Image (cartoon, rainbow, N blue to C red; front, side, top):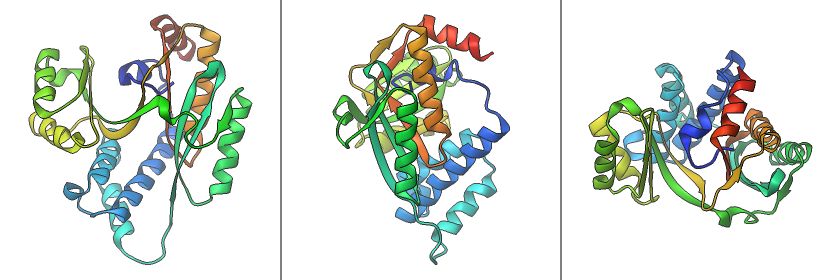
Length: 253
């Protein structure tokens, strides 16, 4: 369900509970730790760390938590070691999924992810089984009130973006991986810090889902995957119609 349009995929989500918020903080801190360990502890020279910090700030994580995670990652010593793993599989209705995880136990995570797919009528596949259906891109998101649609379009194109989708509530800018940092920094200098800025997967040819029951099952699969403590990101090539999104929204109220 987490596909191309940020606005479409957040419009109908439930309000974040305290428990879910805490779990989200844990995942964000894990990403900050890994990014700081793998590269420069200064986010100005570490694009992945900068993206992780932006995500943490967007989730209202206290500055002290962010700074402590970076210090812990660069302090030396054994510490926690996380492996990056990508899983690929199919959900109901032939919808393709990419699941990114950070784990300290590959067997545990693989077993959990496989079980979630099976419970929802899907199946975990081999690496590369669905990856060709997606494109790796940079994604930058601003709230709609930072600029008018025409202004954001011109600014993003001038900075080197590939595509911009805007409405009154959200601006979503996609870039090549090579231009991501340049576009992000140019837009940040003009409009302030974005609500998100990351490297992610988007579907090349999204599958339209207009059946509510199918959408509900796909939504459940996505939520179960996202609730797993090792899973960082979930992407699919499904695209729910406005009518289906409205029904999901009503059911979650």
